[in-house]
Length: 97
Image 1 (cartoon, rainbow, N blue to C red):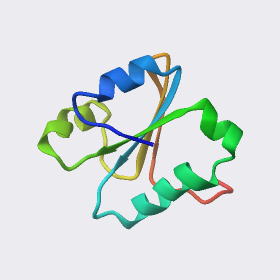
Image 2 (image 1 turned 120 degrees about the vertical axis):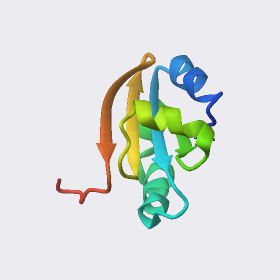
Image 3 (image 1 turned 90 degrees about the vertical axis):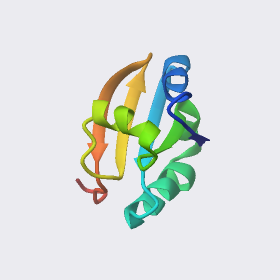
Image 4 (image 1 turned 90 degrees about the horizontal axis):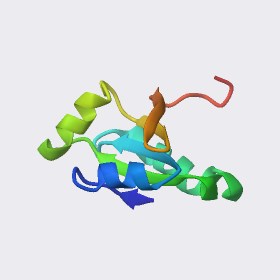
């Protein structure tokens, strides 16, 4: 996983064919679980197909990126293909949802 900043975000999204960005906050307990899922529980072949980045939503310099993604809750995942946002997922879901 790559920790992103306001300056590295666009470069990361644009240089990876498939990118998943985990928007998180240290105060949200679900974010630790989401990080574990992305880091440890995805099958290796799937994990190797994506570039996974994380972006802390709290620093002021990240607020514009969060606003552009309409983030109102975390955890929040943004999925990119060839630099274009293709899907977002908010919150944690049970495996059958």
